[in-house]
Length: 324
Image 1 (cartoon, rainbow, N blue to C red):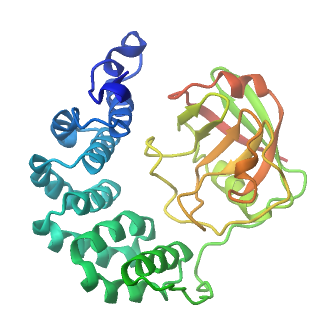
Image 2 (image 1 turned 30 degrees about the vertical axis):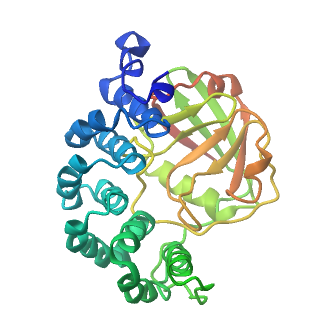
């Protein structure tokens, strides 16, 4: 109803106040961002200063979809904030607002991208929108970056900017880039939740993606982390230390393509672009053939699928145990 009306009214009252306020606000704002009406834009502006990053990100999505002049100043404030994910999203929103006064701050974020590759896409969107042809030199410098995601974003942005196809040259990974040890054949993971346990057999066809999850699990990385995204008949997704779908372990791994199809109960690596996998994973509730070959599939639930079906957003992991 909020999406149809374009206003934030119904969602904050849903769930009998059981879900935390930030979850309800973020969910409602996400729906308002998809609305054909701009009626909720003014409400979204007020939430740009909300203490929860997930709410600020959702409010930015509304303002980007329905630009209003009064959003410019609070969006500029977010560009210099301590949360780099929110700052990058604010750069994209400043571009949608065509706020020329934000250009110096967006330029500063452009300079941070080589050291923070996950910022590349939203920062590039804002940079191109505000700098126009002047954005080209910085984007061309990204074409030789060792991270494939940065090169892909640069090539796509330059193609749009110049009207000519631009391809990034192949770059070998530096010797010091993290590469997880492959998981041993027959390795399994047991996911322990308050709703019960479920077991996953890891896939020998994606040994380094499997090995990455094993390494994180042995470090206790997943203890207390929640499932931040659950879409019925689609996926349950977790492994994000931020809890809003934007976090990770501080590094990324290269994609692997396995022959495993995305049928019910398959474990996949969540991505925001090529070679951006980290700690976020998802389990499919039903066959999802459109994911085949696009997201690394690296395991399958072998016991306790009913627990996966029962997961809700906000459910947490007690631990993830490795065997043997």
